[in-house]
Length: 366
Image (cartoon, rainbow, N blue to C red):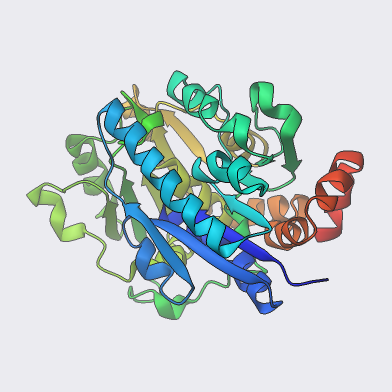
């Protein structure tokens, strides 16, 4: 197979985790790799060992004109980069690759895991970019509405691309808490993403009630995108952020208003409770919760139900064992997402034709 060029567009640290093993494998095969980023949180630090370019700062614009203008500016910059790099395929989770694809005559491969009809902002967001992507990759069951026809569904989850046992080996030495001591991880998102408009999460008052329950049983670690009040600052996570998945794997419980970290916990077989307006509305999480019983969703209108769910988990000595066993069932059902995506990207567009004609071909990557 001849050497190809792949341009990856990453706008969030989570996108790096999604693609990092894919990038490493493709690069190891001799393909040309270039990463373009929006400087968000620790993303620049994560990509420092790779060839990358920066499109913009990572702070989120709040007014419509500013949002549209920032996307336009990133489009212009990425267009220049693509013309110079001359990729064979552009890959990402952001609109820019779709917007510039027709101008450089390069196909774009978009990775999404949210149903586009989840909310009005989600659907409007899809309208601005889904028509331009050449192909959309999504877990089986995700509803992309009128764009289902250009969607390739795979039997896995995005988080498995970096948390499947073939890619991730939990290392207890990376966790600073003494072996044998119980600990719990809390995550508070800032809920500022466009799809989080009017979304509610864990308030400081509710967080204090949760912490009071947990500190009787073990240590509490809080990872927060928002500023913590004084009474919670002593619990702030001070470990290496890049080791958070090792901490998650060995934790006794995860609680948060971040959907993403709840899915990560499920992929690792860690008991988890998510407190969200979106409970019951997201296909991926519905499968994880209802079919595999690997997550507990509590609507943000019911804080007492959250406290009850915390009691149920921490009072059950078999919770961790049960979740690890259910994770084994999930892994037995799903494919190795990284192995599948490397094949799909490397052989595109022939791979798309193969999947359209025979979706079961992906079972070769179990």
